[in-house]
Image 1 (cartoon, rainbow, N blue to C red):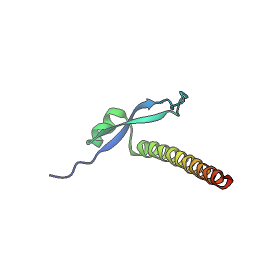
Image 2 (cartoon, one colour; image 1 turned 180 degrees about the vertical axis):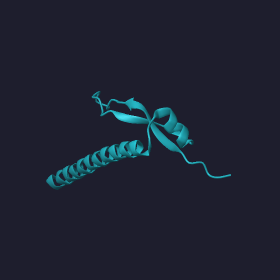
Image 3 (cartoon, rainbow, N blue to C red; image 1 turned 45 degrees about the vertical axis):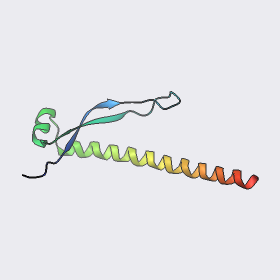
Image 4 (tube, rainbow, N blue to C red; image 1 turned 90 degrees about the vertical axis):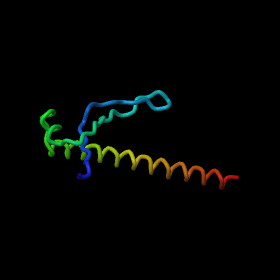
Length: 86
C-alpha cells in the first residue's frame, strides 16, 4: 500500500481582524484531498492553475515575512537606542 499524497485546492477566501480591530488582508482558504484527478474534474482547474495560485501565495508570504523582518530590526534598534540613553 503506497503512501497517500495530499493535494490542496482553493476552497474560498477569508479576512481576519488584527488585535486593534482593523482588517487584515484577505487570504485564500485551501481544502486538502488525496485524489487529484477527482479534484480537477470537480473544479475544472488544472495543475497550471494550482501553480499560479501557489505562486501568488508564496509572493504574499515572502512580502509579509520581509515586513516582519523590517519591523523586528526597527524594534531591536529602538530597544538598543533606549538602553544607550540610560
